[in-house]
Image (cartoon, rainbow, N blue to C red; front, side, top):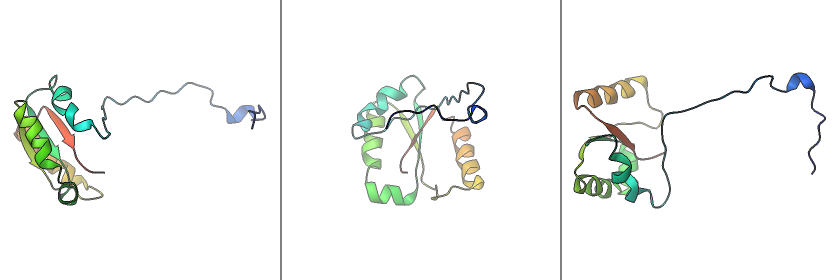
Length: 110
């Protein structure tokens, strides 16, 4: 189907809008190998954030810890994230991150 310019003028946006996130998301089958490389600029302390179910189903936590610790990183685990995280859960994770002077975060799960 060919593009048609039948749209009403008042329907078009009058300004350019920009939405920028500072967060970098890396995902895919070969992602694990990139963890140590991607974390190097941030510092040695990593918080691994996940839910209990994601850990049990994927079995990926030991691999992540092995890669990170083998590259000189210190890991802190926060496995308490529920499917629809509450503000209380977010605040608890934030408190743990601050208490442990966390440099960066790895999230496991969906």
